Image (tube, rainbow, N blue to C red; front, top):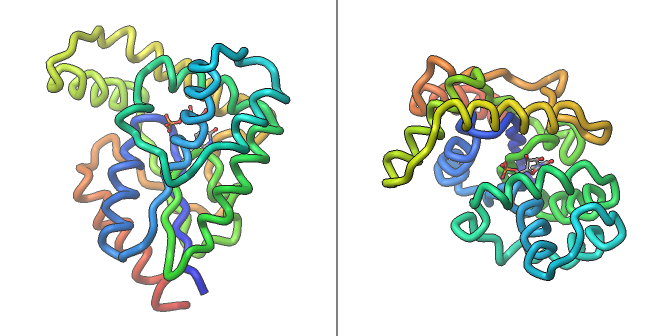
Amino acid sequence: MTFIIAIDGPAAAGKGTLARRIAETYGFHHLDTGLTYRATARALLEAGLPLDDEAVAERVARAVDLAGLDRSVLEQHHIGEAASKIAVMPAVRRALVEAQRSFSARAPGTVLDGRDIGTVVCPDAPVKLYVTASPQVRARRRHDEVLAGGGNADYETILADVKKRDERDMGRADSPLKPAADAHLLDTSEMSIEAAFQAAKTIIDAALNRN
Ligand code: C5P
């Protein structure tokens, strides 16, 4: 049986880094489900199609190829914004969740990270992690990243942005971001990525021993 690790949390909490490291450590397949929403949004933008037509967005979502997802072309800010707008549409979510579920069944195991993995996509996953951090810490990390990359950014603008994205993701009617009842909470506000990884590893090893 495939072993599934579900990782959820808000933007910039460190879940992507954690998910990649876990997948590498256990030899599992990894899917960053945010990229499926981003790829749909990018395809709509590139084709000059509207972001508020559910039937059109669903058709584009059904054509997304999971094998072709590449964060480097999808990470731009305006694509993330557009992704969180189309992510409120139930038909778009149904289409992408179907693809994500079939990915989750790959042997020997999978790591999926996103907003609704433990609650909707893989509610039976034996390991669920909810990775979070305060909006200030997440904005600070994002700000540092931009500066380290030679870019220019204003901390207050980033903080306002992080809060707006949280509101949209936590406030939507379909599959809002929230921890599953049986998720392990990892607050990385005052924890290094190494410490978060070690905490996750302890949880995963215990679950693997039970399986
Ligand atoms: O994680 P990332 O910033 O790439 O996600 C972009 C947007 O896609 C999120 O703000 C969220 O609205 C949406 N998303 C979602 N469900 C997921 C993953 C991402 O609604 N499982």
